Image (cartoon, rainbow over all chains, first blue to last red; front, side, top):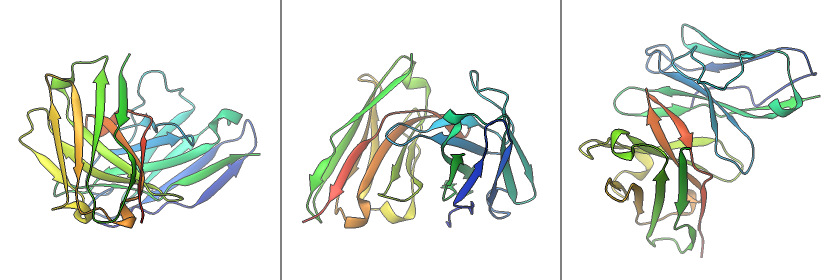
Length: 110
Length: 117
């Protein structure tokens, strides 16, 4: 099972919006609505911010939103804040009792 | 409050064995499937293994099949990862995570495993 494809880095200024992409195949991202996004600050456990493509767990600000088109899922962070600086990973069920992560995107808030 | 605390990591020689533990609290452990996820130094996250609540479904990523075994003790609210025939490429931080609706909603802080001679 190959990792999902994410751009290695992204950046934005406070208040701006940034969108991360996550590209897979019809066997994972395109085949199921079981796509999640995690925010990961170094030294801490990852935090779930989006699941089932678009759903936000309680406590996650509505500045975070998810979508999917075909084999590509996307995460948009609006109104960037300094504390949003972190690594972001997509995650999808890959069929045949396998799960797969993306390689991660490092967000820098300028 | 959901808490997951990993233990049992450390430095181990190639070919050696190690057992990771994850102590769970703050939720009904026996109602939830669980996962192990790892992160090699400077790399991204990698799903390692899954076990359902009744322990009758256990799944592994291809690179650890036949070497790692996931298990749990619902009475002790603990999750385990038994790792044998360890390789340098198994080095990394290992996280236990609670499974919920096809994802992992709570994670531990992670424990470092270093495989080196």
